[in-house]
Image (cartoon, rainbow, N blue to C red; front, side):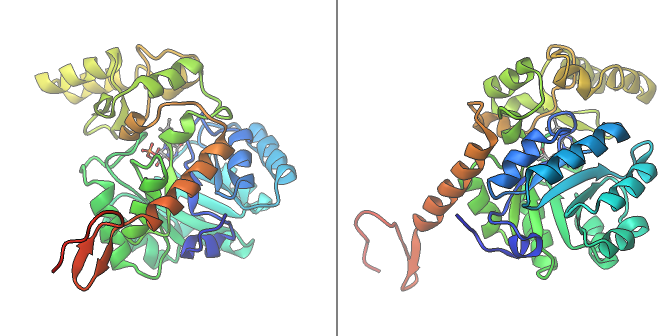
Length: 332
Ligand SMILES: Cc1cc2nc3c(=O)[nH]c(=O)nc-3n(C[C@H](O)[C@H](O)[C@H](O)COP(=O)(O)O)c2cc1C
């Protein structure tokens, strides 16, 4: 199966399906390998990884596939510069950089042949990244799990806005996508691919505690709430932690008190230790669309097949009249 877009041509992959870099969930080789070998783009989340673990993971992925893969690197992270020097030596096919500007390291990655996709959450940031010469943009809207934009602009609007403004830069839409209909929506908006995060939490290869996966499967879309406004907010599944934060926010508690609770727990506690009642269970609104744990390759194939069926089944515009593909057509 192949879907030809500016993104698949840029990176040399079969399908415009990107598995999101997710701390702890894809800080391994298994999940990215399964996705890349199935024709999508597998992404190692390097953010929380120690350098020796990252190096081992890079070696595993190199020996496990000849397809393109990527490393997600939050540029603000402690020790990012050291990790980046190391990464340049490995010359990954793609880097997906978040939370920082591209200028400092872009040239060095380009020299070793790495394509640079930059994560942005506004038109302003997209313009800055595009001017710096990045190869593509990952546009994250409000529905996303992890760190969505605090301004609340949805993926629907943000993707369209940025794709329209930068028609020559491949855009990957992120936040809210869980299936092939989502991919069709992203490409309709002018994106050249879609990034799927929460969908891949519920895969056999995700290195995440089973209680965390179960929470994602059980969650309704509205359970994925935004907490920590003013403190680099996260979208996480509702629990004791998010309720406490929301109470503080409603009461107008001062920043120090809110920050104390916000930083009292981290994603790791939920993702690795299974503390889903009190930890940060980061996940997107698309949790409501995810109902089963599946092998990652099967997820990729299913998204692609559903994309094909969706596009083929869309109502056509004929003689200025929108007609359903099945059923009686009313005369104009
Ligand atoms: C558990 C979790 C961890 C994440 N960790 C990272 C990360 O380390 N770096 C990053 O750039 N984005 C991270 N994200 C955001 C994802 O890369 C992606 O943009 C988001 O999941 C897309 O929204 P979706 O979950 O609705 O598909 C994380 C998201 C989740 C759910």
